[in-house]
Length: 287
Image (tube, rainbow, N blue to C red; front, side, top):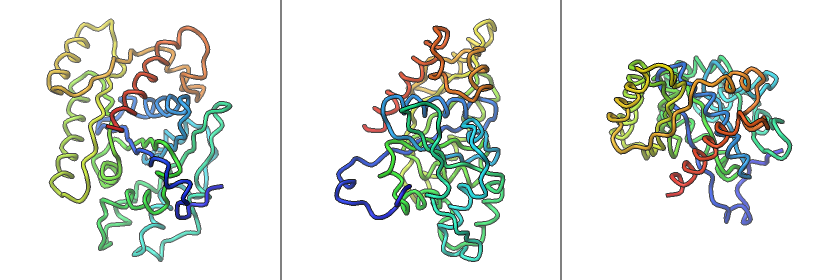
């Protein structure tokens, strides 16, 4: 049970956790898959991880194979806005956060999503406070950074207020993409939102933690040239080793397990890639 009270002298000396998100305006790029396995990579390093599902489709929530709840992140966000008191529920973070049971000794908690998130923008449209900072203030109000080493957010494939809230609340962002022109445009669109946030000057801009080529088909010649072209447009940004379209991903997702829960040799490469990514992200967030 979480107290979510003011930090004690014991917790005040503990470094605050980092908030990161995986984003792309284009759907179908493996964003949720990356977030799920990266969270497990962090947890396998001994970190205490909170996964926050900000997509109304709730695929991130579904991967953890948890039972649907009456309350989820939408209700907590609305509860955190004083102007929406008429819509408040009795839900507290301690009521909504789910302790997942993926593996023994691996600590990952989940703040689930629900379809009500699709109405978030309309619900908060009339408030006077900065609508872009609702998630950021929620994280601060309940001192979630002091409870966790890392908070991993899976965002929706849109460009609406939910995305702006995520970008305003995070320390850094990873950008998964499929090496094709549609996904490339999705990256450009989300980067434009980041630039817009910078111009608002209402909060710090999240650090670019790098790009993740996913679903890379090594049998298709055009895929290599598409990836090379996209890399050129990304300049000096970090581009991770491409994830190939492996059947291992499909098997693990069908069973709602991370790649770390399989001991066979065919999963070793995937495990290595996520470990390398988690270590690099940790280094970038601490710098």
